[in-house]
Amino acid sequence: MTTSATGSSDTGPLTFPEGFLWGAATAAYQIEGAAADDGRGPSIWDTFSRTPGKVRAGHTGDVACDHYHRRSDDVRLMSDLGLAAYRFSVSWPRIQPDGSGPVNPRGLDFYDRLVDELREAGVTPIVTLYHWDLPQSLEDRGGWIARDTAERFADYAAIMHARLGDRVETWTTLNEPWCSAFLGYGSGIHAPGRAEPELGFTAVHHLLLGHGLAVGALRAGGAAKVGITLNLAPVIGDDPVAVSLVDGLQNRIFLDPVLRGEYPADVVERARRFTDWSFVEDGDLETISRPIDLLGVNYYTPQTVAARPGEPASPVFPGSEGIAFGGADAPKTAMGWAIQPFGLTDLLVRLSRDYPGTPLVITENGAAFDDEVKDGAVHDPDRVSYLDAHLRAAHAAIEQGADLRGYMVWSLMDNFEWAEGYGKRFGVVHVDYTTQRRTPKDSALWYRDVIRRNGL
Image (cartoon, rainbow, N blue to C red; front, side, top):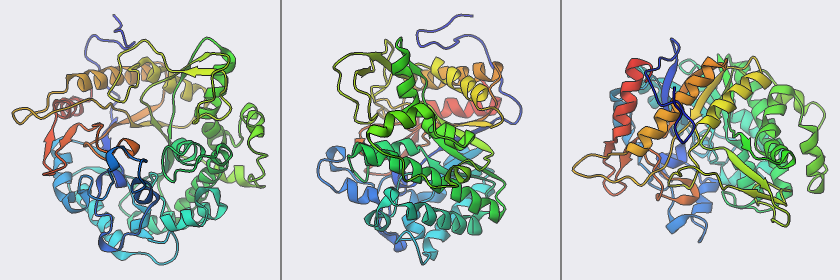
């Protein structure tokens, strides 16, 4: 067996376990558009994207991929690609325009029809309740800095399960709370654009509290499978102090409360310069650590760190003075992220070793490259290579004992890439944003064949 420069096995066919779940993922604000249609209220991303200088080229999600109006065509596309599952998020402001109170029936109707069409097409729906589009009215009342938002999130979870729970088996509460907390409140890179490091830690806790309360609400409604999706990354470096600090802020600050019922002691101590943790109330950690049925893993690249005295702190890792980030000697995606598939193997094996008993699903994995349509086709060999290498890395983790049950490619189609606007294309399906024409890339056809053979 040989190993490529990116650390993945590059020889021979591989077969995944029987019943392995193959799918693709999207998020509501990134694809739906119809920002003011049928009673939808504004979200923090509507506000943020309209704020000059926050999103590249002033792009917004007002139209995006117009999935709201092209739902049926997109479901047919999923069926053509042979997807067994589709992970999508619900737009909270489409359901409750004010974040609480009256329900918007037209918003519920959209997801009701989407679920029915998916099931009719033989595609299993997997619902994510929160993928960053908080109703603006809740942000106006404090957002994730306010404890009440966690309570309102549980109410919303109950509303969604009451409508879809007879046809949706698997529910994910939050997507990447690290981004919501440290990009949204700690550094201001994402919505709502607040740049106060201490608020990042408050938001972490209230997001996790919302998760735990939502797990309770979903269980009460009879949900079969409930989980959370975290963006996780192995931390690589020669300095153990730097590695431990970044691992704590990237990974353990979420994994330990959810799966062990406690915040890591070293993270709590290091964060005391920013917060006294007074927002943690009696019983909160018991709520946060309610048992889950699966852990969603979003993986793109490791964190590479090195000790460098005098280096200012990264705005997204409060307290990281003296640590330099990046510098991995590896090919890069269009996002500038190092392509290192071995990190996925290491991550999955670590999760099953350190947090045993929780099945894993890769809920996002993919790459942005500079794709173009030529003669009606999109040839994206770099993406095919990326996906092939990461699937081999996932298979290696299974062979080493990781309890991995499925894989969702990010993303089904090109879409609004948050602060990067429409300049970065992650989809296996190309979208012409002027005509809304969908063109499956070579990677989509390759992935269709992977699904058919349950392997490489």
